[in-house]
Image 1 (tube, rainbow, N blue to C red):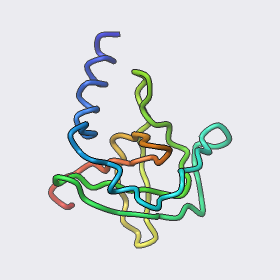
Image 2: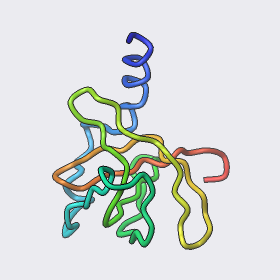
Image 3: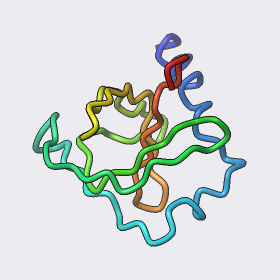
Image 4: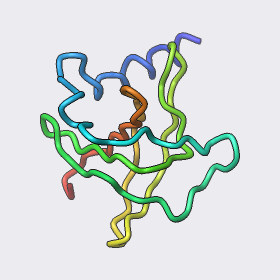
Length: 109
């Protein structure tokens, strides 16, 4: 249990409460969560790809990835964009119905 709590604390550093997230989701529809039906979603539309304080964040129209909530860790996984770019999603947070997918940053990004 302690290890899980430590992972949760470490992961939650990507989502900063000091950021005004509302300005990044203006006119964004709520993300449709399809994770109860499937663990893999096809025909997903990328609505926004942006950077906040050096952190890349993606917003899709739908996602099978559970967002961190109530102390429960969110999902992580891999997404392949239409460009062929393969990205590791490190954290998913939900803000006002919109799922924010935090991408792992490395030397290539």
